[in-house]
Every structure is written in structure tokens, then in C-alpha cells.
Image (cartoon, rainbow, N blue to C red; front, side):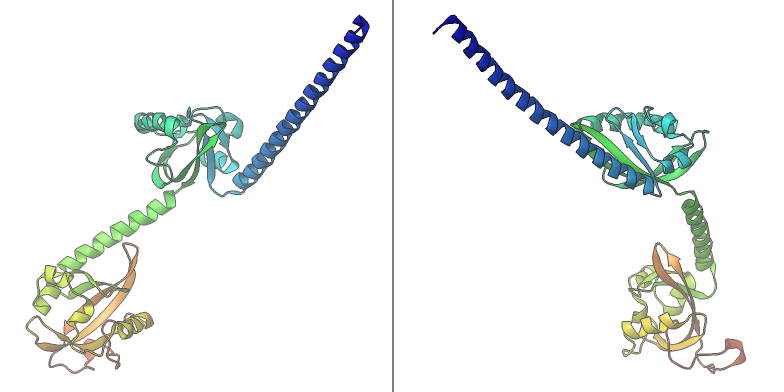
Length: 301
């Protein structure tokens, strides 16, 4: 083969290899463009969901640096997006929690796990002005470019804490009244009819100890076996506040008529009745001192 022919053959071979290389680069570029487009679409969907959330949504990388901060987070903490992204999450964590936070972050960095990941927890946070307030956080872990990131939904629960505190105060006062009252009182779970709490006057009335009463249901004190759970719940669902009569049984099986009035409230997350009982043995069911009795036989209204 002539030298000129060899040169032509070499050029053709190089051209063919160049075409193959160009095709490979174009294919790689198309894949890269597809990944970018897919990533952009995902980011756009994420932003749409995040900005539509009523709660603060914050994303933090495995170094504890804020990488996303939605508008609800701006309102909650007072930091604008541009002043929050790129900063350490520690700026919204009270100082007393920093050591615990750093320990958890180190474990999260390696495993994507932590004591609060996958849970909803309550804690405290600090806003831009140094004011501390209670928050509820739902935390999850995701991987971005093979590195763990934490995503948290955060909401201010100041109002809820105030309500819970008032409820605790009210219940504490109620329990003091319950224990010190001269009238027999019981707290009864609406769903199970289980006796939740009694005062000493109730124990004395029925001849049981407090502990023995707490092992019973309200219907255990009723002598009429026809009064079923369904009947009792129907009565209690209709009204409270009236005075009702039913034959009850003491620990020695002595039967006696009991006038019962009740009110309902939420206690420990459950609908509860506080029933007040009076022994009306030998008394008319319609005397002026007892008020207006409801004629239907009922346990606590």
C-alpha cells in the first residue's frame, strides 16, 4: 500500500473514531440534560409543596447547614430566606441543647438515623430576636447526592401549650375538690365505663376501699342486670346535669337508691364523666330538696 493510501486510511479511521466519540459525548450530554431537567422538575415540585405548606419547612445537610427555608419558616423565625440558607441550624436551637444536637448530628451524618428521625417531637426554638417558644417538629431523612439531609416540618405550639396548661390547672383543682369533697364523687370513662378516680366519700358510701373501686366499672355498682353497656351509654349520651335514680349495691350487697348527677369533660384525652352520688334511702323521689328527678331510671344521665 502506498504511503498516500495509508495516510487516507489512517484519517478515515481517526474520523470514524471521532464520530463514535462525538456520538458518545452527545449521548452523555443528553443524559446529563435529562438528569438536570428531571432534577429541576423535582426541585420545582418540592418548592411548590414546601411553599404551600402551612408549617415551616427546613432542610439541613449532613453538616447542619440550612439548604432550604420556606416562607413559613421566614414568618416563624424572622430570618429571610437569604439570611437563613447557608447558616448553621444551631442559630434556632436554644444554647442548652447544642451539645445534644451536635452529638445527634454526628450520628446522623454517618447513618441517616437519630433519636428524632421519623418521629414527631416537642421542643423549644429561638427566633431571630432571641425569643424562645415551644415547637412541634416532624423529622425525616433523605439522601441528596449520596449524603444524608434532614427535612423538618416545624410549627409553633405556644397556644396549645397554654390551653394544656390551663387544662392541667383545672384538672388539678378538680381533683382537689374531688378528694376533699363531702359528696361522693367518681370520674368514669365514657367508652369503657371504668371508674378512673373516686374520693373518700364515694368509698365510704359503697363500703369499698379506693383501690377496690378503681378495679371496677360503674355498672358493677348497679343492681339491675338489665342495665347494659349500650343502655348506659345511650343515657349518658343524651344529657347531663339532671338528677337520676337507680338502685345501687354496697360491698355487702345491700341495695339502696342513689340520686346521680353528672357533667362531662375531656380528661387525659378521653371523654369522662364526673358523677355525684347521694344515698336517698327512705326519701321521696320528688321532694323539693332533691330537685326535679328524671323519671327514667338512669345511672348518670
